[in-house]
Length: 225
Image 1 (cartoon, rainbow, N blue to C red):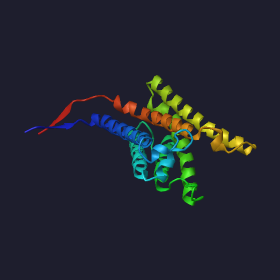
Image 2 (cartoon, rainbow, N blue to C red):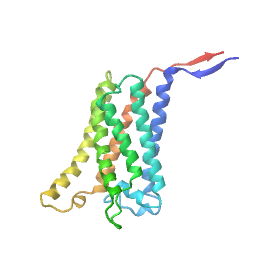
Image 3 (cartoon, one colour):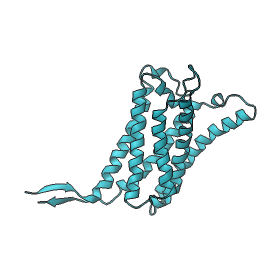
């Protein structure tokens, strides 16, 4: 009797598809929160994404972020296993910091200013900064190794990473404006909108990591008796 088992060369493609589904699922859940009560009352223009975690819908937010964290970790690990990225490299380190920052964001919700400042809120804020910076910088380091023969995809990954950093630069600019004597930085820009555009761009940049895995050689099946 014979049975069919997936050929080893199909594993990268399967991993890539699972990771893309996890990342897309996480993004979809965050988007869904804007249409479910009570989080439908949160302004997507002025309020940050983490505001969702201060509501009864926190469990949905947590699942969404965890899905993205798992998808991210597996994508970077797959490239290490395929020897596209050295395990001791800046790209892998920054990818790990991005993933860990997502776990910290779940463990420590943002400050609920209706109650007052909190240590957990401070941890959340710094973890968010680490994540928003580490992922695009990590992709800039990784792009050449991951897309050695695909200049189009290489530049697409780099462009998305640079745009992500530009969105974050707007936030830093608002902070600098406040320090120079301007108004509160979170009022200077539409913070919620900028953060959502930043997050969307970073997830698109992250998704480019799946492209080389999806384009790996297809194979049939291996027959096992």
